Length: 500
Image (tube, rainbow, N blue to C red; front, side, top):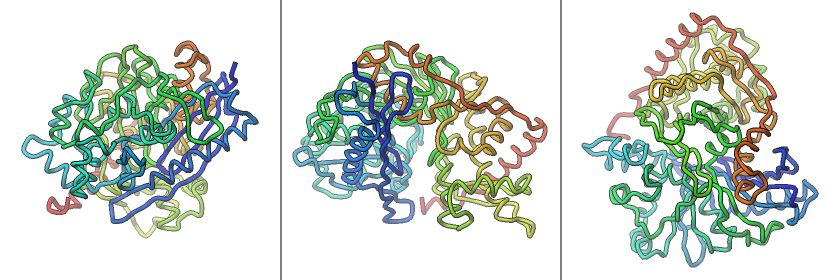
């Protein structure tokens, strides 16, 4: 039998391919970064063709690194940056515009127009989401509006729409398969959470022709075979999960109440809520996963726009650190922030506030403040925002999590992980295999072809590597949390209504 399952992890800043063995251990990896395109303030784009080229390259690199060939690989799974949007020509496979990235805020005027007098929540009962620049539907509408001829072509089925998973599968199958899975579809503002199909009401409101949409499938089934000139040609593509749902799956959070937080460019906390969607005005109600023709599992999600991106800002824009791994030592050189708070609302605040008018703020600066205080405050901002999200989960679902499973690049920062446990009052736990996003996609693909027989096999593979217990005095935590809220209030209403 094949020894490995491959996972393509297409993220905001890079594309990776990782081969995992049956115990969930990494056997080989390939990774390439891609350019971040910023045509205007608040606009973020990627070149879809660069992403495809990189994905093909990292697949070959990972297979070579594992000393494997196609016969060693049972299936390929895909996990991806979710709301990032691509429109392309069905006949030529060429994109008609750069991919518009999930962070992009150019659709703010359109979102306000769509909200009208009915408000931003007019589709929440159907989709589980507020109208926001975050999601894919308005981004696709913007592209259609950018060139008058595109809408007619889209209505005729000549143009295709997809998130990055759909784009990659189209290209990796030689333009023969146009699908997405329920987790990615649930992030478009276009899918009915109850029926798991495209919503006519949402399509009509946002102005998206059904003819350009992919077929919605489960997260774990065979969609087609790789036919892209790679070493894995002929291997089944058998798993799709949006990146945060993939991390939830890779962390084996299969029981209602189990939660994970991924610390990457942004910060994304998901809590499994079981077989029924839970409504919330502060969080996103989303599909956690669906295996084959089985019932879906749902989740509540708190999306935080800036986590690791804040550390990169300290490095690239301020020159406070020379590399990202220097931030912990700098932050640890002071015992606290000196009552300085950073609110990294670079393009507004996501959950639980959803404020497009907020902008980044540093408050509490005195002549005593050093770059170390600011660095520490930037790290602590991630922990405070996570606390806000878990408070919102408790209020919406009545779920008080006993521990928080953590993953992503920032979890190597011991200072941050300890502070996170302190402000939550529950342990933070890091698994032995840190690549949980890619691992979740591998598990979804492997389950579809019989490498693993059930989620119980996945849970049996999970191993704890490090645990941080809360140490800070509770009164001190609550005092600092109140100060955080005061800092956030000072970040609001910066962008006047006429400029949004």
